[in-house]
Image: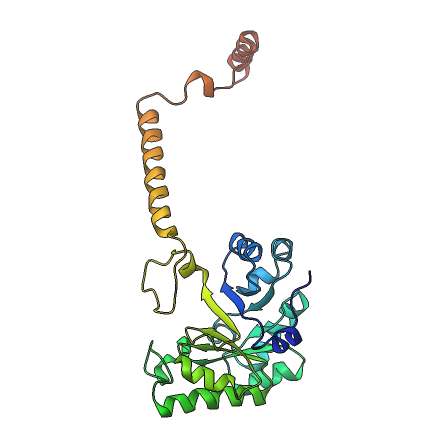
Length: 265
C-alpha cells in the first residue's frame, strides 16, 4: 500500500484516529510500520536513507528539526526541497508565518506547531500547559488560524487542555496532531523513547510507557560488563587465546619461514 496523502488525512478527520510516533532509528521505524503506526516524525537524514522506505513503505513521514538549526525562509526552502524530492510527505515548520507561507506557496505540505512549543517556551511560561486561561486559549486559537491562513495543512497541538482542543477541532480545517492535547486531535503523537520506556529523565504527564527498555538496557549493560571482565581476566591470566582460537600452520612452513628470516631479516 502507498502512504496516506494529505487529502486522505484531511478527509479522515473525525472518522479515523491516526497513531503517530517520533522515531530515531531504522529499527524503530520498521517496528512502528509493522505495528500499524501510520504517521512518523523522523530525523531529516532518515529521508535520504534508501533503506527507510524498504522498512516503512506505507507510512506518512514528517521530517523535522529545530528551526534554529535551519535558519530563515530561504534556508527552510533549501532544506525542504531535497526532502520532498526524496520522499517526505510533509515538513515540520516552527519558524515564521512567512516561512510557512513560502513553503506552502511551493506546494510543500507544512505542519506547524501550537500550544507548548519547546523552542519558544519562554513566551508561554516554560514547560507547562498552554490554554488553561482564557488568554492562552485564545492564543492557541490565534496560532491555529494564522497557520491555516498561511497555508499549513496540519499543526501539532501540544499540552493544551483537551476541552480547548475539542473546541478548536470543531472550528478549524487543520489536521490536529495531539501531543498531550486530548482525543479531539485527529492523530495521537508520542515519542518512541516514552512508548518504549527508554527515557530516564522526566516523563511527561501525557506519555504512556508500553515497555521498559531502560531496565532492559541496565540488564544488558550488566551482562556487557560481566563478559568484558571475564575477557580481561582471561587475557591477563594467559587463558586467552587458547589453542582453539588460533590459526595453525604446517611445521615445515614455519621452519622454512624461520630459515628465510634468518637469512633475510
